[in-house]
Length: 257
Picture 1 (cartoon, rainbow, N blue to C red):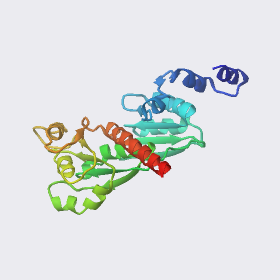
Picture 2: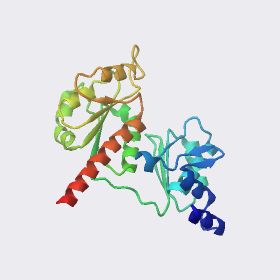
Picture 3: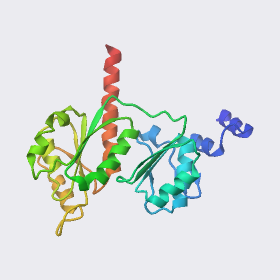
Picture 4: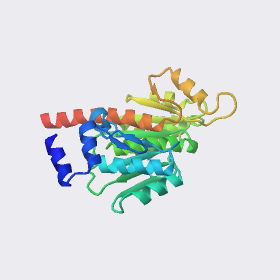
């Protein structure tokens, strides 16, 4: 603690960074950023831009980069993105996924994690790409290798069968589907890896907006886990934790050999 305080006094350490190291979070005018979440929980903190003003999102993003070297924004629109880019240092690198509505910023000295594990992201149709993309971004930030299998909905089971080798090679699968949400159940019956069902808010009439997909996945007769409707971040984070455990086990096995 004394080293941190002396570094602040000498001007070598930013007070916000010192606060994050001492308390685990950085306080800003837009709220508190949980700088210790990845160390404590294994999942990087993300800033939900939806419901925040562009200035609030930018303030939190700046605190994130300053305290952890990285900022992850979800559900970000153009105004959020523009504010963050304008606020952060020019040396920061950005990756924006327009479809997933995410923005990731890395400081020049940020060292991303790497995991010896592959997660498959599977979608029933193109309409599932937003939620699936959010999951993919989080997984990549957690260090997993991501393999995408797109548009293999159950209306034509041959599309799933054509990708069986890829599905079975993955260590974990996140399967996104709308409508009746049958795809995760079908996939889980064909593989021996964990499957996380991601219901998507696509559909018509009764049970639309993801409700039928969620209820269908909850009633799956094959063993799957299910997250909430459009909860791409949660699905990606859960798969990332599994991938980390698999990677750690493999690393331990390699060291034992």
